[in-house]
Length: 270
Image 1 (tube, helix red, strand yellow):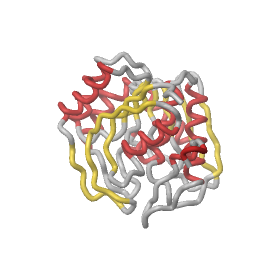
Image 2 (cartoon, one colour):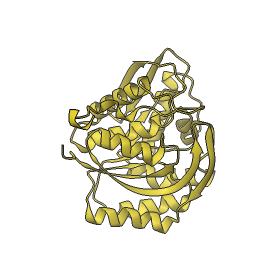
Image 3 (cartoon, one colour):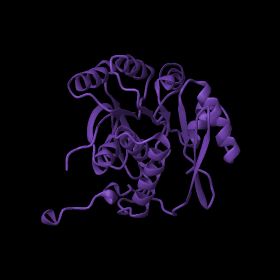
Image 4 (cartoon, helix red, strand yellow):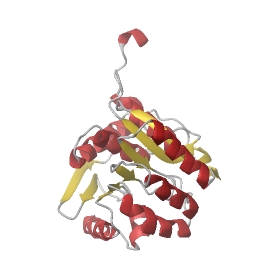
């Protein structure tokens, strides 16, 4: 099997392997595409929490992006953890040199265990410099609340927040509804023309580490292969739900999901 497309991932490393760039690589690979990376930070973490964040210099992050893309041109770019204003500015600068319109921005702000991964100054820079460059923005409810300075308690609140985010200049917004206490999980895709609600039964489990990273990378992969946005979101959500449902139950905290759920292993390799 040959890779169907090429994805550049710009994100932080997760030493536990469940989220961040590790989850992104596993997702892109499991869905049949080729992953390139630009590491923004190295984290020391496990399923119980983040213990340290070691930032990479902004100039070195920019070099990772431009050198990789000069040689292998990506069909899509997925952006995850960007911890400072200087890093965000360096990424915005690098993107000017790359002709890829399919940019998926996952505004990672808080780790599953509650650790804050971005400061207030960086949030402001993200809103002013980077959001308008994205084809799709994929915040969860807490991230959407921070970006829009609103409270989200129900579906109408999610739609209202998404409309505010569209005014920042992003073409499409997918607000993930996993943080709402309900039997069903509702994700909202919104642009200036339409609203689409994806409704799925919520799976009761503590093993959801890396779901946001995984979903944005899955959507980026499907988009890069030529699928329309709505279908890419639908397939990405389905992949994540299957990965949650078949989780390996590793660790004592918020465990990882099963990125390999889409792979059928050739008999001779078993």
